[in-house]
Structures are given as structure tokens and as C-alpha cells.
Length: 443
Ligand code: CMC
Image 1 (cartoon, helix red, strand yellow):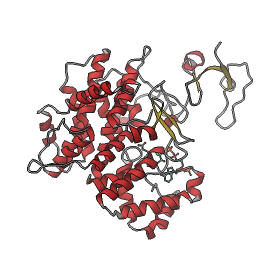
Image 2 (cartoon, protein in one colour):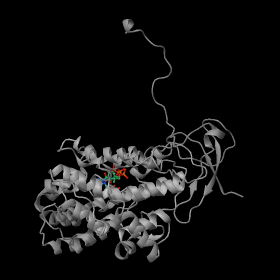
Image 3 (cartoon, helix red, strand yellow):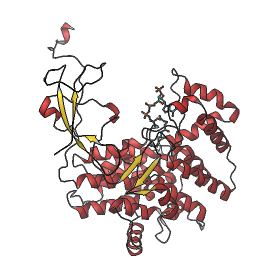
Image 4 (cartoon, rainbow, N blue to C red):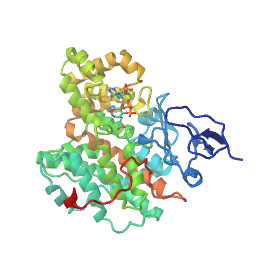
């Protein structure tokens, strides 16, 4: 016997009541089955609503809508909790490496030592890209934003791999996931090298995933490059913290693009495009720009006045989150990571002083307290990345690199569902009613 809830359709302004038997526009009794997950709020199953009652639900921004079932990642926004396949992010960031986390996300369980070794070998031995990919880069202006390059080259990978395009074959999907996770650091590092006019560095499979990425970013053919283990570990933790975040805008975009049966590389390119925006992955770049604009702690009060002014569009970048109404657990780990990197590299970044004071003042200000606005993952990540030597314009590419495992895992989960359907939202139409065409001469 399914659980049911009864609701009455009401006008916009009046609260819903629950007792009516008539099916008229002003009063409608609707019964919804309730679905329960393993944790988290129950959901009303409204799938038959239109078929049964001829009405849609209205939820722009998906404020109350679960668009899919998923077993990958869980967030409790009030508690500030993030679980990958059930494991808390703090435990994973402190005890596991990024590729171990990738295995967990992709396959659902932590790997055995042998499984991890095989996984790492497979990923690290597929990090090269086709030589012809190099020519794509030369088609971009050297001052192109690296995210624009990444959108293009990730989509272009679709034209290179014709041996595994059957999305309904689980082995083909797995090969695609390996390729993307392996090649993304190479593509990101190439975007950087192209922007500074240095030769592309080929990957080195003897290094760790993070170590290889750092080498491809910062080594030049004329000199040996030694990976700093503290920076390597920090990079690895940054990757882990960004690996997945359930149904965010870019992941939902990848799912929607993939729901039509599109090529997976093209779907991931759509995820890269969505991530670019400053409300999403572009926030880490925006945070650093903001800290630089503030410049000095003495300018914080006037900046916060701008942020709180309803008529001013300025937002405190790196603050607030659709789901977290408490500390973003990733921000805490990122801050610890930030301290370790700055100490190791002996960097005294004035932006850190501004960031810490901004955080302190904002967290005691009623505007932020009332709206439950806390620092998110992007608040400190930019300061670490800058200390490592990564330019601001590359920050979102690093996020994309790390999030690729999440995107492809969700894509794979969706395509593997027995009742997978193309995503097709409906609308509340507010345009003109039907009207007849007026010839040009009569207008
Ligand atoms: N600074 C100032 N006010 C804010 C901020 C902010 N960063 N975020 C939200 N608010 C206010 C907003 O003005 C609104 O106030 P009021 O109720 O008076 O109208 C209230 O808080 C609710 O905001 P909202 O826009 O309805 O919340 P949302 O869930 O739609 O937005 C967000 C979430 C992340 C887009 C938003 O908090 C934001 O723009 N933050 C800054 C950008 C940022 O740091 N993004 C990274 C998110 S974490 C990484 C990722 O997911 O990619």
C-alpha cells in the first residue's frame, strides 16, 4: 500500500487545504505516492499528475524538485554534511587519494589495494591525447579564456573515439569514463601552456595524478621539474573536494544533455560550459577578483554595504549555497589546506588576510546570519591555487578537471537506468494567445 498525501489546488496567494472532492480549477484533490530514499527528505511522486489531472508543477530553479534518483552523493545542507557513496568528505579528504575517490564514485565501493593499483595504472597510462588535439589549441587566440578552450576541446574528443560510442554498452561507458578522467588534466594543462606560449608537456605516468598535472602545468623541456609533496597533496585534496556534489547545475546539465542519447564527450562539454558561470564554478575566480578589488581590510565595511544593498547586484563571492545553510564542509578542509600550502611555500598573500577578516565580519553580521550565508568551497580555494602558481583564469578549469568524475558517474548512472527517459521540463506559458499573421505592408 503506497503512502499518500492529499492536497487541494488553490489560488497563488491562498495556502493549500486538504479537503475537497471536486476536480475543478479552484478545488482539486490530488493524491501523490511518497517515495523515501535511504536518507534525506521524502519526495512526492508527481509523475502521473499531468496524465491524471492535466496540470503541471511549477518550480523554476528546482527549489523543491528532485529530478532523478541517485546513489552517488548525499548532502545535508542544514548539518553541513557531504557524503560520497556514504563516506564523509572529511574522512575521504584526510585518508584517501583522489583516484581512490574516483574509483569509489564510479564503482560505488572503496577499492582493494589491488583494484586501486590497477585503476591508477589504467588512468595514468591513458593520459596522452591524440597528437591532432594539439592543432585544436592552435586554432584559439592565445588570450582566449581557458574555459572557452576547455569547452571546445572536451567536445572535440567526441570526434576521436569511435570505438566506444555505444552508450547502452556498460563497457563502452566505462572506457569513456577512464578516458575523460585520464585526459582532463592533460587538456587543462595544455590550455595553460598555450596561454603562456610554452610548449605542451607530455604526461609522465610515473608520477601521481596530481604530481603529473603539476608537472604538465609548470615544467619546461629545458629543466628538470621536482614535484613538491605538500603542493601535490594539496592539489590532490582540492580534486577530492570538487569531485562530486550531487545534482548541481553542471551535473544536471550533463544528465539532461545525456538523456537525449548524445555523445558523452559532448555532454561533459555541456557540463564544462555550465560550470563556467560565476554562480557555480566560476566563483573561485570571482572570489580572487573580489579580494583584489577590496584590497585592504579597511575597505571591507564599505564593500559589505554594497553587498547588502538591494539595488546593487554585488554579491559576496564564495559565500552562500543553494543547499548548505551551514558551513560548507569543503570550505573548512580547504582553509586547513590553504594554511599548509602557504606555510610550505612561505607565501604571505595579502588576499588571505582580507579573506579571513571578511569571513569574520560577515559571520557576525545579521544580514548573513539571517540568510544562513556561510563560506563555500570557493572562498579559500583561489588563495591556495594562486600560491601554487596557478593563474586566476585557470581556477575554474581545475574545478572542471576534478568534477569530471562526478559528471561521468552521474551520466553513467542515468544511462544505466531501466526506465531512463529524455529530460523534458514543461512550462507555464505567459506569451500571446493564438493570433493571425499580419502582412508586412499592414504593420
Ligand atoms: N552575497 C550576498 N547576498 C547573498 C549571497 C551572497 N553571496 N548569496 C545569497 N544572498 C542573499 C540573496 O540576495 C537573497 O537575499 P534576499 O532573501 O534578501 O533576497 C538570499 O541570500 C537568498 O539568495 P538566493 O539567490 O535566493 O539563493 P540561491 O540558493 O538561489 O543562490 C548561490 C545560491 C550560490 C547562487 C548564491 O548564494 C551566490 O550567488 N553566491 C555567490 C556565488 C558563489 O559563491 N557561488 C559558488 C557556490 S559553491 C560552488 C558551486 O556550487 O559551484
